[in-house]
Length: 419
Image (cartoon, rainbow, N blue to C red; front, side, top):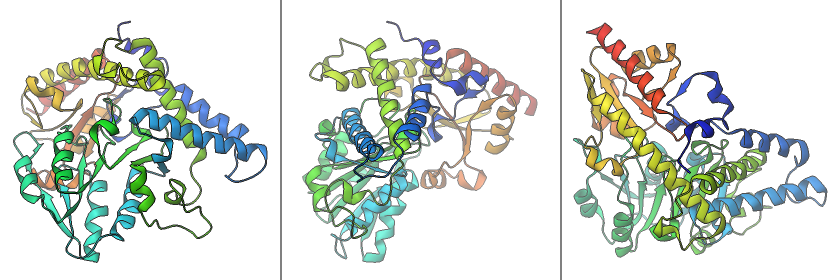
């Protein structure tokens, strides 16, 4: 079947408000199935783990179901490679502290100017242990990672390379396979922040061969839950920070405190929702996914269908922005290379601050973000931080061509009124 965004939209109660949600990079809306799953858990299974009674046993099942669902989504080898937490930032700080216990003064960690600060600050914090932080620059003209700079910084002293799958600020998709191969040649581990990329394309941790990967369910149509993938043998070796009665096994030892069980029930529903897209709109002829079966196949084809639809919508958006006077776009602007970016764009406009632009759009029920979106390093590198950052527009599979056209019309009016 042809991808139908209007059928998709019927699953999302928030979209019935008439507002245009272009704020997806900061958190997507959720389908009714997710809302019901969270409520059902609270009605029928609300308990902590470890009890002999029914609701506790149901919670154990919810956790097991969620690990299986996320393992399918990421193509992990085992559900035991999936760790849940309150958000990606907290999980990354927890992991960096555990990794830090295995490092020595003089060891090096690579971070990049393209990343969200959640994949920078947890690693920079290890400087207090004598760890040396190496910074990889960007190419400011198109906001791509400076690969020659990456190669210069990689050495046999490198222990961790922390890199984004895609930039949450400007949408650039990094050449992860190349980065991972280069790092592994020097026996370095690779930690991938896939938070921004996850709602826009298939993720295969086995094909990538990354050592760790994080994402957040609230960025791919689920509740506020963070997810960490790690190769099982690496997770097993980590000396986790935990309370003494907690289990000393993977993944339990990394899940500090009581988890957001109702949210994790919603994660299962979000994965089931994406699976249903694969069943309905999946591209059966996608050759690289023919080796997958069951839910993993449907998830991969769902994300391929989403990627294909969003690509056309994004091209429409970019053509309109590039045709609007007084706008400066940051990131890849050549249509031939749009496959190297997500459907997210950051821009500034003459005479108006990003906050003023987003405020005027909000008055028209068009929701976009302004500022630095915690991607502080790239905003400083581009000289935008001192001017209020940039306006960020992010498309999702539930957005439509009519919404893009409405946005461009309002933006054009805003621009003309300020000329």
